[in-house]
Image (tube, rainbow, N blue to C red; front, side, top):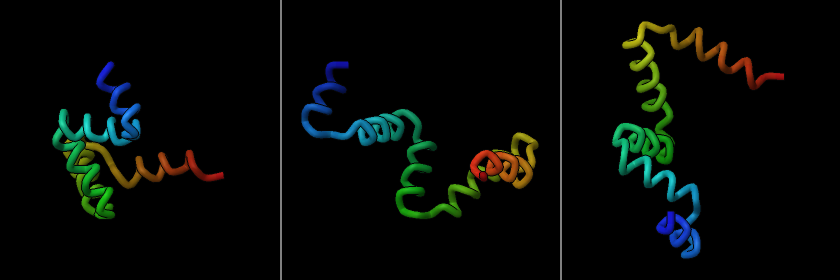
Length: 72
């Protein structure tokens, strides 16, 4: 915890600290963050579709249902 506070005192944003922690502890999530930062949303979508396919889910149906939460 002291390292976290020291980083913040040194001007490092909490977002940057969390992102770096994720990238260091979970390479797959780190790769997804890098892809999103580069604007390669198609690669992120393909990753999600592949995970859904492996789990036997219907990405298009579930994503459409998820997006209903954001429409007025």
